[in-house]
Length: 265
Figure 1 (cartoon, helix red, strand yellow):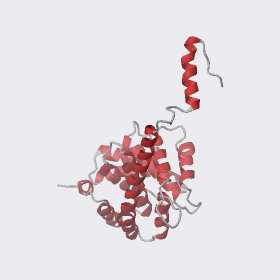
Figure 2 (cartoon, one colour):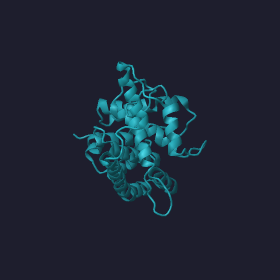
Figure 3 (cartoon, one colour):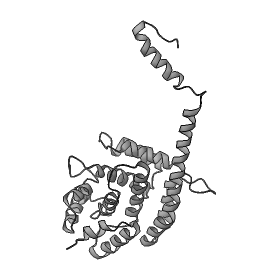
Figure 4 (cartoon, one colour):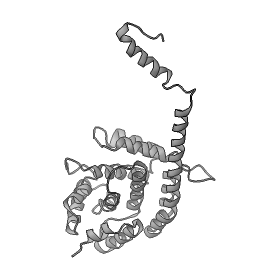
C-alpha cells in the first residue's frame, strides 16, 4: 500500500505538491506557511542555476517538509534546537525512508548528525539565507548581499558546507538579473516583494509558480547566455593578453627563479 511519502514524491508538479502539503498542514497541524514556499522557490532557482548532480524532486520535497515541526516562537530555545529532529521523526511515520528523514534533520546542525548528506547542505544554505531575507517581529529583512555576508561570516563561520561557494555565486548571479523594465529590481528582491504583498498562501503559490517562475527562468537562461558570450568574445580577442600584467609578472618571476632572473616591478 502506498504511503503519503510515495504520493508526494511521485507528484512532480511543484504547485500540486505545495497544494497537497497545504491541506496536510491544515489537517495534521504541521508547519507550512509562505516562508516555506519562498525558500522552496530559492532552492528551485539554485538547482536550475548550479546544475548540481542531485535528485531535484527529492530536494524540493525535502525543502517543503524539513520544517514541519518548526515553531513560530523564536524564544523557545529548546524547541528551536529540537524541531528538525522531531520533524524527521514525524516524516518517518508517514512513510519517508531513513535517508530522506536524515536529509531533513540536517537542515540545521543542532542534532549533530554526521556525516552530513549533500542534499542537507543545500537545505541549510537556503533555509538560513531565505530566512534572513524576510521580515521578523524583531527586525526587518536583510538585503541579499547583507544576508550573504552574514551567512558566510556569522551563521556558518567555521562550518563546512560543500556548496557555499556555489551558492554565493548563485546569489551574485541573481543580483545581476533585472526583472522589471520600469524600475531596477533584482530577481530576489522581486520574490521578496511578492511575498510581502501576498497575504494568502494559496495566492502566493499561484503567483510564484505561474507568474514569477516562467519569467525568471527565461531571465536566468538569458543571463547565462550573455555571460557565455562575453567569456567567448574575450577568448577570441587576439589583442587581449592571455594573462593580466600582474599574473604575467608572477609567472615570469617564478620561472626566473631557476636562472636567477626577476622581472622589474
